[in-house]
Length: 264
Ligand SMILES: [Fe+2]
Image (cartoon, rainbow, N blue to C red):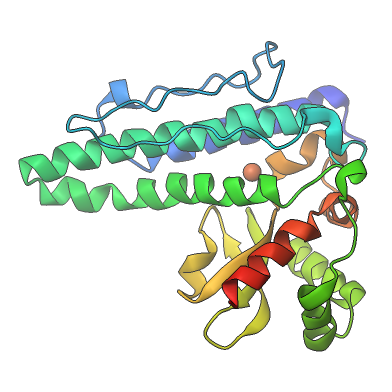
């Protein structure tokens, strides 16, 4: 049985790998742009402590900043621990934003110089880090404390559509849990509505690929993060237990609103 110490080492290794992946995905970038977020800081107090001012690029480039969560870090317990929520939001999501902004600034500079090679080289970093920002921004809204309706089954049009497409909510949950558990490496499992064909679909994406990479008419209703950083501190290697429990804090009200709007 692995010790807590070795578990923490594994998590730290994953954090380090994620950091290195983001760094190595933009080879050739000036090291000053490669400043990494320091993981594991003990000074993680509130969900708002790292709200940052978006830096401006060379020509007034609009960059991104960490969005606040609509609840406190401990509000999703016991399904998701406060420690996971803090690290996930303040460190992981922030790291995607930091690296996305740096890549955008590099892109802005490369375009200004007519440096086509660098413009092309930056696409990987933009997809990975921009996807990380897009995906996590959705993920936070997909969760809600139980006292605020987290876990309450969808009603009205989305509830009916789920019954019609999948047989029942339980069948949908089983399908998403199975696909999420089977996803190799890191990625996301999604419930989406296809605006063109007006039907619900379950999809998976690898790494930080956003759902739009699977089809331009797909609108994400619910995205579940199956990266180890989303569950390892609490669930260790048992991803299925994380997937089983996350449904207790799913914000179906938000998913229903997005569904209705998408089909308007
Ligand atoms: Fe994540």
